[in-house]
Amino acid sequence: MRKNNKRRTDKIEVIANQTNLFSYTGLIPFFTFCERSGFFRLFDARFPEPGTDGYPPSDIIKTLWTAIIISEGRFHLSIIDMFRETPAFLYALKMCDIPSASAVGDFIKRMARAKIPKRNRKSKKEELVNGIDIIQNIFYEVTKEIMKQMRSVLNGIIDYDASVIEENKQYSKKMYTGEYGTMGYFAFMGRICIMPELEPGNHSPGDKADRRTISCIEFCWKTGIKVKKMRADAASYIANLFNFCNKKKYKKIEFYIRAVSSNALKQSIETVVHYFGAGWKKEKIRQAKKIEGKEIIIGEATHCMDKTDDPFRLICETQEKNVATEEVDLFGPVIKTIRSFWSVATNDYNSSPTKVLETYNGRQYESEHGNQRLKSEFHIGSLPFRGKDGLLPNRAFCYLCAMLHNVFEFYKYECLPKIDWVKKLPTIRNEKIKIPAKITTTAAILKIELPGYAIETCKWLNAMITVLRKFRRKIKITKIAPEYTELIYRRI
Image (cartoon, rainbow, N blue to C red; front, side):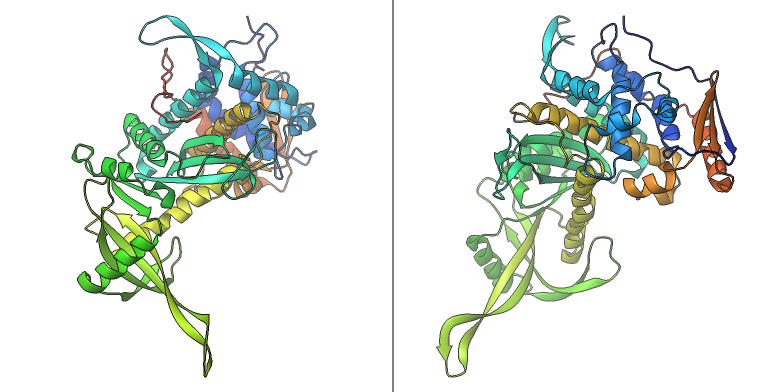
């Protein structure tokens, strides 16, 4: 029987007064939203039951998320020990005792490495399951519920990308860049992360990229979200992925994938564009999220690979560059014009070449910025665990960070004005979370006392608490946990 670690809170009052200050008052509406939505109840239902003196899993995750949100530099678990004894944090997190940094770290390590008994959905018998699989299933269960609620703002476009995480630890492998670290495979639909997988650093960016992308598409289908398009870089230039997107029973998913540069491809492009196409044309193209366009030279060709069932379009951008050679004539070094190519493969035959390139360029904003958000703002780039066996707990940490990212996007969608939806975590932290106040508790009433000048902030907090008090949109928690391990491809 686990101990009761919940502090009773019947009412929240907000007043403006000139008192001592507490820095992170904005954490209260966020964690109240998580509690009202049912996320913490889900964690307690899915994670194994703790021992007699153990903390509930929801308290462990709440403490970790607090440390991630308030951490502005490089992330360390030790930041937890800096705030856990502060009474204001106890009141804000509605706990009697905040777990220490070592308790949070031990929980993640045990969950990542343990074999946990679980009832099989088909055979109804108990079997041992890897703890990392349970955390993975929880991430995809939470993401599925969030995507259902945010269906109206999801664009139906999957952006897949691989990203290196440079680190020098005992388990780190040499990456294709020459540095040591871990390889991350991420996929997004809009601002929601639908794949945060870590693999050893010696894996290439194109390692099973087709199977990973197909996993994301099938996960979206299972969620009930229609996938219209997918975008990726040259690592996903794979015939199997092209064939999957062209299947008629899947209603033909349009792909926009950068083609792998090779001499054979360049020769094919030049031949087709020059002799069979409309030639090279100067067009203006708009870059992602930019109003002004730039002038480029583009052409169109048709191409096919050995294992593709159907041909596809190649939209090519070319640049000419004058380079001095070693040959010398009467006027000095001989100047040679070199033409470089950059092309996008697509099965979209209805859009113009410029529209295809603009659609592909959109992934630079969605996917690459998404990777940057996960790595710098939610600290996946600062993996905390070391040692030879540090990869598994870091993989669990990655799932928990990506889960916080998605929950935070859901919080912005439900509770913040539309202008705040595109803002990054540091901006939201400075505007909505770092609110100076004094937090006290009397009986079961939590009082937030703001400085006398913070009248507008007081009104905003009161409005937020009113909204959260009426909030009834809870996520669905089934008796038997859904399994995504077989659906989502993971090599190790």
